[in-house]
Length: 403
Image 1 (tube, rainbow, N blue to C red):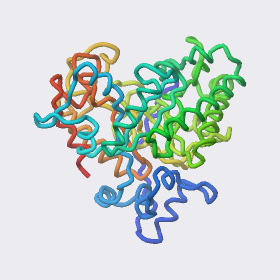
Image 2 (image 1 turned 135 degrees about the vertical axis):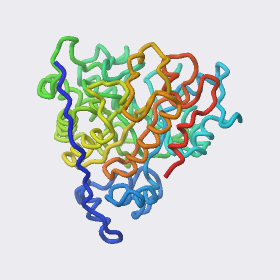
Image 3 (image 1 turned 120 degrees about the vertical axis):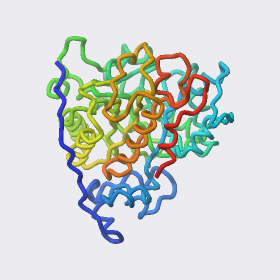
C-alpha cells in the first residue's frame, strides 16, 4: 500500500542572518560537535566562510552570491556511448566537448553511474573514462555505487548475479571487499572528491533486498522486513569505502520527494543503525505527478521538514523538466505541466532557472543535479534533454549560468 503524500506549506527556516561569528552556530544547526560538516572534506581546500554560506539563511540575493560551494552538477552518463555512435553537442551552432561545454555553462560536479561489471556501459572501465573526461574539463566527479549490474531504482533493486544467492552476511562481506577495491581503483584513475552515493533510489531496498510485488511498503513494514537488512549492506559498503578513503562522506538517495514522513522515517532509521548519512538525497520530477509531484514551495516544505528532523542538508541527485509534450516510452506519462511553466523550450528554461535559484536560496539544500541533459535524439528522454534533436543546446542552460 502506498503511503499518502504529505502536502506541507512552505516553512522557510531563516534562523541565522548575521555574518562573521554567527556562521558557526548555523553550521551546528546541521552537525553536532563530534560530527564535522561533510563539505569540509569533499575537496582538498574549502574555506569556512564559503562553507558556512551553504547553510546560513541569508537574504536571497546574498545567498546567490555567497554559495560557491553549492554542488551544481549533471548526470551525463550516456555521453560516451552516444559519442561512439557519432553524436556531438553544440552551443550556438559551435561543436564543443560535452564535458567542457557543461563546465563553461556553470556545471561543477559530475554524477558518475557505476555498475558492478568491469565492461560495458556504466561498468568500471566505462565509468573510469567518464571520471577522466569530466576531470579534464574541470568538473568534480563523484561515484554512485549502484551495487547492481544493471538499473536499480525505486521499482527494482536486483543483486548482481555473483551475489544474488549469497546469504546476507556473505553478501555484506562481498560488498565490503568490492567497495574497497573499486574506490582504490578509481582514486588511482583521477577521482579526487571524497563524496560517494551508496545505491540509487533505495527507498525500498538495495542489492537484492526488496519487497514482493504485493507487500506493503509503509515505513513500519519496511523497517521490520527490508530496512534492517538494507542497513547492513549499506554499512558494509561504507566500511569498504572508508577502508581506502577515511575522509569519505556519504549521500543516501531515495525518491519519495512527495512524502516528508516517509523520508524522515527512512533517514532516522538509517542513522539509528549507525549508517553514516552526511547528505539526504531526494529525486524531484514535478512533471511526473508521482505523489502529486509538488510545487517548488511544497517541495521546499518537505526539504525543510526532513532537514530539521535529521539535522542534515539535502541534495537533489536527479531532476528534469520536459520541453515538449511530444514524447513517449517509459516516461511518456511525465508530461504534466507545472503551473506557469509550459512544456516548451522556454518553459523548460524558466522552470530550471527558477528551480536552481530556489535551491541556492534554501540553506537546507546543498546541491542539485540535472539528470541526463546530454541524452537528445528520438528516444524517450528527448523532451527532458537540454539539447534539441540536432544536438543544439536549449535555452535552459542559462539556469546553470545564473547566480
